Image (cartoon, rainbow, N blue to C red; front, side):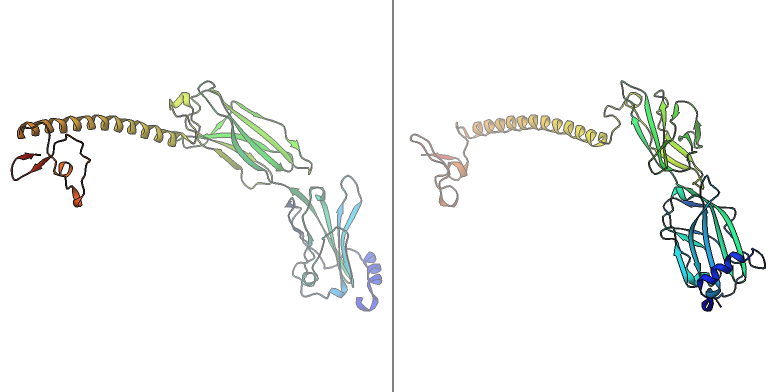
Length: 342
């Protein structure tokens, strides 16, 4: 019928229809929570609907303007007419024919939170539904050691930063865990949490500080920043590894990443010094021993020099002389037993 009468006539009939009859729509409860910058679907469905004829159907979506009774039109479809007043807004036609008039919105923003109204017409009946859309953003957090304990300064300050959350309300607490007490213990002292700071996009940041007042607190505990927010199903926990301080542990190598390599290098240097020192005295002992054996040999053969066939031989090795003899030098050749002088 609509294809013959056209979109203008269907639109005129739309206004004359009352919200009555057997047609009804279902929304996603009273409130639908969506996340900032997500592509979202705002639900509006005809329950138990058979396959419908899109030519006699129509759907319109509105959003109530904040602080006003007026509405902004987001999307409309009827007959052969379709228009999106919010960029990217759509209702897929193939889903509409199956009774699904849900609105698709890409990259939803904080300013788009509010009351949404869905109107559906299946000639000659009309139905509408309303839902409150809340846009939230989850915090992104991290824990860092802003001030490490030293020998001179025994205080340590731990910082927990949560950024990009919405709405503004947030809860930040501190807990610690130790091997002696495996349960998480809530900390109530030495905590300062600043007020939320608003970003340009409307989200908020907050920073919380934990000061450890004495070296006893730096006892190898694991400290956690616990963040609670409406956008989270469970609280977020951001951990800082165990803290150690030179004044507490007495470690001469400190508590930094390089302590193990430095310790290894120092031990290796000590061992090398010990080895060189002992090799020096071993060499002296060998030299003295060799000299004493040489004296004993000379006394045994009864001469002033020690015969060595490779050094004192005029032929040497491979027919070549091993030494240059100077005038007046004496050569000893081994002949059977004993020595002959030339």
